[in-house]
Length: 518
Image 1 (tube, helix red, strand yellow):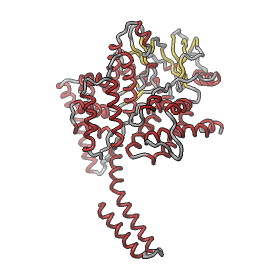
Image 2 (image 1 turned 60 degrees about the vertical axis):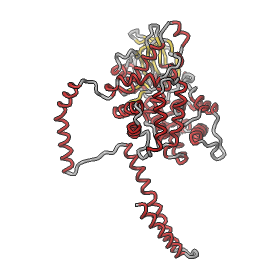
Image 3 (image 1 turned 90 degrees about the vertical axis):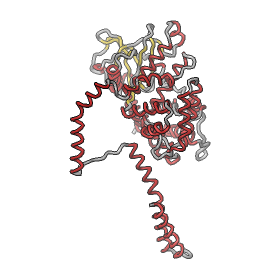
Image 4 (image 1 turned 45 degrees about the vertical axis):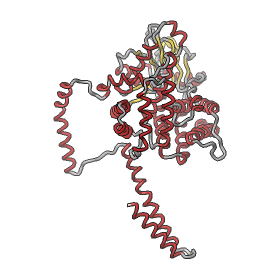
């Protein structure tokens, strides 16, 4: 009972209510709701900070959505930093005992953390063999606190759901669903260790260094990795003293993220300055692998085709790819999308655009999307966050840095690789020939299943949504007609004046409604 009150205290629930209500009112453009006004941008930031890990991270994701928030709110949301005071001595001892009790891993362990964030804190230590390591300790009970926060968030999302149009509701639901899934992974340090090992496996020669993990000393509560030294990416003063080429650093970073996002489909979604170190030799080190996202091959290929169509100003192909990705609803009328597509084409076609003017155009585009039935894919939420962080890093050092324009030529050069055509023509033909017997076997199985009435058809989530919308559109007038007919029967049995005449009119209207709906 004590824990329940701690996780679901009335004061905390009220603060969450005020934050979520403010977010929903801002998105809808309402000035008040039942005489409650939205929090000011500064107060919203203060409230989110006081609520801790879950809401700080949610706000950081929402801060990428210029279609949700006006500039004055985005300004404060982007200032939210995932840095809070260290754990209490009592909590530290509990989590340390739970993580390492009964195991001898360290010769030395510094109890004072060198960094402290909402989910964990980092300590310097020396392994038994003398290796210097960094130890990330999960905050005591953080997983239960976050699980409770997700439950509260889900409750208020359902409560306010009727306030939104189908367009905004779908997009907002995708943000909250993806955020909830991601943050539960982030609190399990076993998953972060697996992510780190996967990065070593996938990106061994990308010119970016990662810490070395020590899984034998790690667990869900603690992650042990090599201690890496360097200057934060935003430490302009010290980096300038090293005489390092920032253009080369940004080229290396942009190339690396093209590889992650479009070639391999496994990307680090949180490259903020604290997670990027630069050594005295100019080497780039990437830290903190809690926020890592996968992009399915099909989605990557559709994104690349979308960019290619936009670059070639091919409207039909652009809309087709946008619908495949689920960005635009399949039943959206193409006539109304022409202006939106032209905005995208202008952004990509203007080589003279500065980063600032491109951002202004991008915000205008996002604002225009409010009137269109669209929903950003869940992966795109973190792609946008990653892109905005890299854009910010580049503009700190390079005049008129423009991340999107820099990515396009790299993507063009690596288009065949991104689409899976890494071999030459002869190698591709040879591979397809070798796979032909397997393809014929699959065709035979489909024919056998069809003849034996065993064929199963699976519908993708996007197709399910399109089918649901079509059914709603088709059945709504029929349901209205049925309701009018039922009302006619009630009127027939009532004692109201001219009840028979009224019931006949209602019955006829109901029947006509159904007939004209079919």
